[in-house]
Image 1 (cartoon, rainbow, N blue to C red):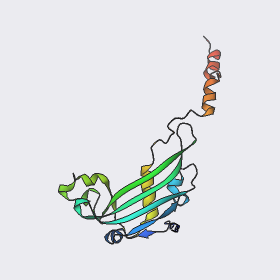
Image 2: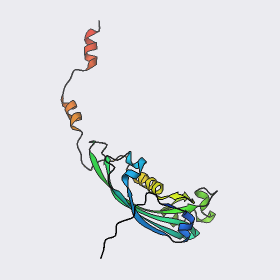
Image 3: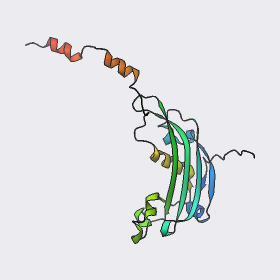
Image 4: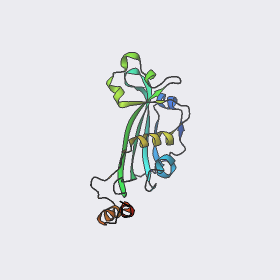
Length: 181
Protein backbone atom coordinates (compact mmCIF):
# COMPACT_ATOMS: atom_id res chain seq x y z
CA UNK A 1 0.00 0.00 0.00
CA UNK A 2 1.55 3.32 -1.03
CA UNK A 3 1.41 6.43 1.11
CA UNK A 4 0.20 9.40 -0.92
CA UNK A 5 1.43 12.88 0.03
CA UNK A 6 -1.34 15.22 1.14
CA UNK A 7 -2.30 18.13 -1.09
CA UNK A 8 -1.39 21.63 0.15
CA UNK A 9 -4.70 23.48 0.41
CA UNK A 10 -3.29 27.01 0.83
CA UNK A 11 -4.67 28.33 -2.47
CA UNK A 12 -7.90 26.34 -2.52
CA UNK A 13 -11.04 28.37 -3.18
CA UNK A 14 -14.50 26.81 -3.56
CA UNK A 15 -18.00 27.90 -4.52
CA UNK A 16 -19.52 26.82 -1.23
CA UNK A 17 -23.10 26.22 -2.45
CA UNK A 18 -21.96 24.25 -5.51
CA UNK A 19 -19.47 22.28 -3.37
CA UNK A 20 -22.27 21.38 -0.93
CA UNK A 21 -24.78 20.54 -3.70
CA UNK A 22 -22.23 18.29 -5.43
CA UNK A 23 -21.28 16.56 -2.17
CA UNK A 24 -17.67 17.64 -2.72
CA UNK A 25 -14.77 16.28 -0.69
CA UNK A 26 -11.31 17.81 -0.20
CA UNK A 27 -8.53 16.41 1.97
CA UNK A 28 -5.13 17.95 2.49
CA UNK A 29 -2.94 20.06 4.72
CA UNK A 30 -2.21 23.70 5.50
CA UNK A 31 1.16 24.99 6.70
CA UNK A 32 0.93 26.96 9.95
CA UNK A 33 3.08 29.64 8.32
CA UNK A 34 0.32 30.20 5.72
CA UNK A 35 -2.16 31.22 8.46
CA UNK A 36 -1.00 34.74 9.47
CA UNK A 37 -3.54 35.45 12.24
CA UNK A 38 -2.88 32.06 13.83
CA UNK A 39 0.90 32.39 13.43
CA UNK A 40 0.74 35.52 15.61
CA UNK A 41 -0.38 33.49 18.65
CA UNK A 42 2.00 30.54 18.17
CA UNK A 43 5.38 30.19 19.87
CA UNK A 44 6.76 28.69 16.69
CA UNK A 45 4.63 28.58 13.55
CA UNK A 46 6.13 25.33 12.24
CA UNK A 47 4.07 22.34 11.26
CA UNK A 48 0.85 21.50 9.47
CA UNK A 49 -2.87 21.26 10.04
CA UNK A 50 -4.59 18.30 8.42
CA UNK A 51 -7.97 19.22 6.91
CA UNK A 52 -10.98 17.34 5.59
CA UNK A 53 -13.93 19.22 4.07
CA UNK A 54 -17.12 17.53 2.90
CA UNK A 55 -20.09 19.21 1.21
CA UNK A 56 -23.49 18.38 2.70
CA UNK A 57 -26.49 18.59 0.40
CA UNK A 58 -28.83 18.89 3.39
CA UNK A 59 -28.04 19.95 6.93
CA UNK A 60 -30.55 18.93 9.58
CA UNK A 61 -34.30 18.99 9.19
CA UNK A 62 -34.27 22.27 7.24
CA UNK A 63 -32.64 20.68 4.20
CA UNK A 64 -30.16 23.53 3.92
CA UNK A 65 -26.74 23.09 2.28
CA UNK A 66 -23.75 22.85 4.59
CA UNK A 67 -20.14 21.87 5.12
CA UNK A 68 -18.52 19.36 7.45
CA UNK A 69 -15.01 20.48 8.40
CA UNK A 70 -12.49 18.39 10.31
CA UNK A 71 -9.11 19.85 11.29
CA UNK A 72 -6.35 18.34 13.39
CA UNK A 73 -2.83 19.30 14.32
CA UNK A 74 -0.49 20.21 17.15
CA UNK A 75 -0.01 23.88 18.02
CA UNK A 76 2.67 25.37 20.26
CA UNK A 77 1.06 28.08 22.38
CA UNK A 78 2.58 30.25 25.12
CA UNK A 79 1.62 29.15 28.64
CA UNK A 80 0.18 32.22 30.35
CA UNK A 81 1.57 31.17 33.71
CA UNK A 82 5.16 30.02 33.16
CA UNK A 83 5.60 31.58 29.67
CA UNK A 84 7.05 28.33 28.28
CA UNK A 85 5.62 26.51 25.28
CA UNK A 86 2.55 24.36 25.88
CA UNK A 87 1.36 21.83 23.28
CA UNK A 88 -2.27 22.17 22.27
CA UNK A 89 -3.81 19.29 20.37
CA UNK A 90 -6.21 21.02 17.97
CA UNK A 91 -9.12 18.78 16.98
CA UNK A 92 -12.08 20.41 15.24
CA UNK A 93 -15.19 18.67 13.96
CA UNK A 94 -17.61 21.40 12.78
CA UNK A 95 -20.86 21.34 10.86
CA UNK A 96 -21.44 24.64 9.12
CA UNK A 97 -24.83 25.69 7.74
CA UNK A 98 -24.49 27.84 4.62
CA UNK A 99 -26.74 30.90 4.66
CA UNK A 100 -27.97 32.28 1.38
CA UNK A 101 -27.25 35.85 0.26
CA UNK A 102 -29.42 38.27 2.23
CA UNK A 103 -30.01 35.84 5.12
CA UNK A 104 -28.54 36.44 8.53
CA UNK A 105 -27.65 33.44 10.68
CA UNK A 106 -31.02 33.34 12.46
CA UNK A 107 -32.94 33.90 9.18
CA UNK A 108 -31.39 30.75 7.72
CA UNK A 109 -33.67 28.51 9.78
CA UNK A 110 -37.41 28.19 9.31
CA UNK A 111 -39.55 29.63 12.14
CA UNK A 112 -40.52 26.34 13.81
CA UNK A 113 -37.05 24.80 13.71
CA UNK A 114 -35.13 27.21 15.90
CA UNK A 115 -35.34 24.74 18.79
CA UNK A 116 -34.33 21.64 16.81
CA UNK A 117 -31.52 19.57 18.36
CA UNK A 118 -29.41 19.53 15.18
CA UNK A 119 -29.03 23.33 15.45
CA UNK A 120 -26.83 22.91 18.52
CA UNK A 121 -24.33 21.08 16.31
CA UNK A 122 -24.23 23.73 13.56
CA UNK A 123 -22.80 27.19 13.09
CA UNK A 124 -24.07 29.42 10.32
CA UNK A 125 -21.66 31.01 7.84
CA UNK A 126 -22.48 33.02 4.72
CA UNK A 127 -22.25 31.10 1.48
CA UNK A 128 -19.71 32.40 -0.99
CA UNK A 129 -18.79 31.80 -4.60
CA UNK A 130 -15.14 32.24 -3.58
CA UNK A 131 -14.74 30.70 -0.12
CA UNK A 132 -11.07 30.43 0.79
CA UNK A 133 -10.38 27.18 2.61
CA UNK A 134 -7.40 28.85 4.29
CA UNK A 135 -9.62 31.58 5.80
CA UNK A 136 -12.32 29.10 6.83
CA UNK A 137 -9.83 26.84 8.61
CA UNK A 138 -8.03 29.76 10.26
CA UNK A 139 -11.32 31.15 11.60
CA UNK A 140 -12.35 27.78 13.04
CA UNK A 141 -8.93 27.16 14.64
CA UNK A 142 -8.85 30.62 16.24
CA UNK A 143 -12.30 29.97 17.72
CA UNK A 144 -11.10 26.62 19.11
CA UNK A 145 -8.04 27.99 20.93
CA UNK A 146 -8.16 28.11 24.73
CA UNK A 147 -8.71 31.60 26.14
CA UNK A 148 -5.81 31.17 28.56
CA UNK A 149 -3.42 28.44 27.42
CA UNK A 150 -1.43 26.87 30.26
CA UNK A 151 0.11 23.62 31.43
CA UNK A 152 -1.84 21.38 33.80
CA UNK A 153 0.89 21.94 36.44
CA UNK A 154 3.50 24.59 36.06
CA UNK A 155 5.51 26.87 38.28
CA UNK A 156 5.90 30.60 38.11
CA UNK A 157 8.78 31.78 35.91
CA UNK A 158 12.20 31.65 37.61
CA UNK A 159 12.68 35.42 37.34
CA UNK A 160 9.42 36.06 39.18
CA UNK A 161 10.26 33.53 41.89
CA UNK A 162 13.69 35.11 42.35
CA UNK A 163 12.09 38.56 42.64
CA UNK A 164 9.77 37.35 45.39
CA UNK A 165 12.62 35.87 47.42
CA UNK A 166 14.84 38.94 47.20
CA UNK A 167 13.96 41.57 49.77
CA UNK A 168 14.83 44.83 48.07
CA UNK A 169 13.83 47.95 49.92
CA UNK A 170 10.73 49.60 48.59
CA UNK A 171 11.34 52.87 46.71
CA UNK A 172 8.70 54.40 48.98
CA UNK A 173 10.74 53.49 52.07
CA UNK A 174 13.45 55.89 50.88
CA UNK A 175 10.83 58.62 50.46
CA UNK A 176 9.47 57.92 53.93
CA UNK A 177 12.96 58.64 55.33
CA UNK A 178 12.97 62.05 53.62
CA UNK A 179 9.59 62.98 55.00
CA UNK A 180 9.74 65.64 57.74
CA UNK A 181 7.56 65.18 60.72
